[in-house]
Length: 389
Image (cartoon, rainbow, N blue to C red):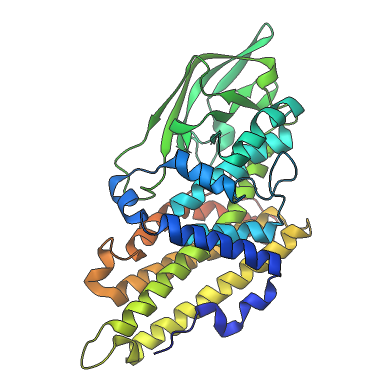
């Protein structure tokens, strides 16, 4: 029995250049060799060997891969998206590690930092020798970062930061934290060595989703940093929001990876699972499920590639990124749930990746802007009316 890859139906790979295919293949090989044999155990134990993985990811050029210079790979945006897709086919937590490192922490330093900050951190982060995190969200201010209570006040030549951040990926293992705080000058960003006195972090435990990911709370208690810690070009809330747009772009592709892996697992299972004297894949209702899922999956992939072309042309707009995340994460969750139903009881075990993807996608639906917030961004673009307030 020959199983067809879901993207072969529309011959989607013809849209890719050879360089893009090579990057996708290298990332897929890493996931097959390093992630898939271990991910069920990492998910079950709620742990991740992030230091080891960062070095390995750095060696194949996936950290900050879409940035230019500073020992970064300098790939195009579509290649970065394809890498995110393959990483999330392994697990959303692995893609989150790479997204936060490259599209949040490194991107913030790259776009808004001083040359000294770039030289100090970006080469080490690209190689995986240094881990970064991005401190924007607070326990009481997720969708409304403008309401943050973390503050930074000038004291002579220094700044003193007080407050806390929540749901910070990589936070308790990070070497450098990009921290956003209210100042008398507005919201500013700071590039902070996590060994700075007054900086503490605590890993968030007892998660039911994104278990193979380090999630932390950061607390700043009279944390004194020099003037050189401030990101000189980050002068308003627009700066962290632009960083979030970078991370959201990767999710558009990443969600497709989780959905594709769920689909492939279900298709393989259905071809081997015998019931009523034959494989369950021969039954009409099962084939109808696959037909609907393959159509949604291909549609999501085409949307991702279209947005990749817009981003490579430097023409992408925030509402387009919101539409990509809004559609593709919703589609991925639906596909994962349908795939789980095909596996029946077997679908809830860690022997198969589907329920893990389904759990992870519930977090992906919420972070980097909730599903509802992205709906409002799209609504404002269509109507010209903001519904946020």
